[in-house]
Image (spheres, rainbow, N blue to C red):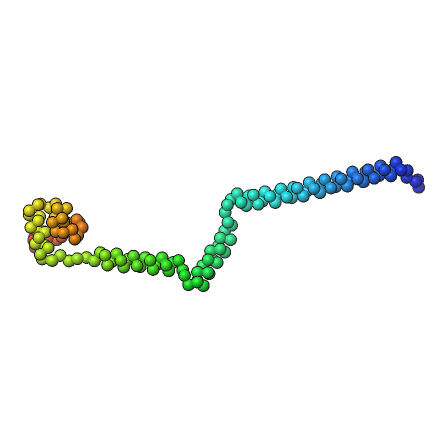
Length: 146
């Protein structure tokens, strides 16, 4: 075997350094590509601005579970509010029956003014809506025919 000269050894070192540099560049390039791919994945994830469906379901289940534990259900609150409103409306809108005096006054005002419901309502004290006077007039006409 021949002994390698200093020049040969220097060339071998240069070749090895070049080889190592190339390997290092390739490794860095792969790392950069990998990082770019990961960044693209995360940017795509956030572009949508949407939570995946399976996470939404899980989250809603947790809220329902928490409401059950707390005993405060929004549905119960809604139903209770609805019931209170309905009771208030029922108390406010109790139908009033017509008295004989009111019937007589209605007939008198119709003969005096014709059937002008707004004038009749004003004369009778605005206790009822206009449609109530019209309806009662229809009832009285039917009674008169019988």
